[in-house]
Image 1 (cartoon, helix red, strand yellow):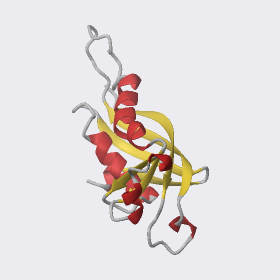
Image 2: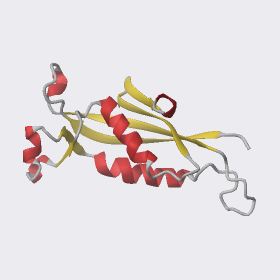
Image 3: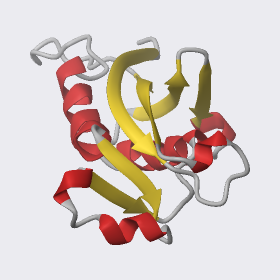
Length: 148
């Protein structure tokens, strides 16, 4: 059986701040993120299986990404856990403020997302690459082959 890549696309809205940055991203601002997740594997080769011919069910991939990424980051303000803004997280008027142990750049967020998704995939399916658009024309990519 051939090796096949499957890709599913997602979108979410998130704000962030880059503490200490020397440009406009030092201010709280938001993006409409677009995430493409590509997995790779061999289709199930059991004619008795209802998933015969599938690498994995698109619904299963959607459930993993929703659980690990969308539900955690959609409509949040993502900040470094050292940011003074994190002290305001209990102020409900400011919405959902989430701290992470990295500067919330597109690149760092992408690596974090790759780690979150990889740990949930079925053992016979591997994460091939992910692409995260921060804006319509700016994105970062992560490839498993670059990170072995």
